[in-house]
Length: 145
Image (cartoon, rainbow, N blue to C red; front, side):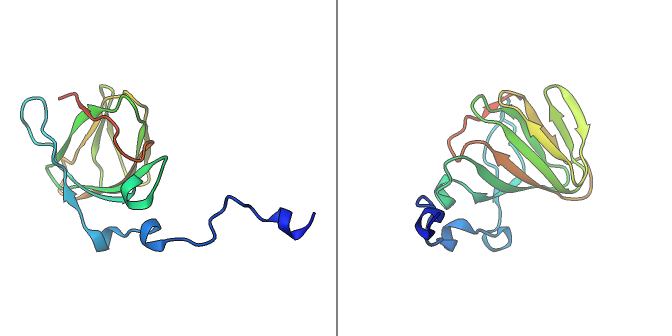
């Protein structure tokens, strides 16, 4: 095998760090801005770290989510994308397809496409979690409450 056959021709030669690296502490959070079926506000904070717009991702979106004490991320589903939560801190009550689960730090929670899900922080401690979606953008968000 010669040296030229060892090199991958599809690998990028340089990396655009401004597109590939984003920090939640530098860019901060945005409030969720959806309204539920009865006019109630979807609550929580999000900081998108990897997406089509930020990173030119063509296959996923990753965010840092924060649910403050008393906040509720309303139950909803995505007919066209799966999702996951990784709980970093706090113990939210997570709703999964009609079941309730008291999550804890270190939990990885898989949410298949079409499964109704949401979370409620009924504690006095903020909840931090990593959230991933299997599409880089434009997934459907359908409220179930």
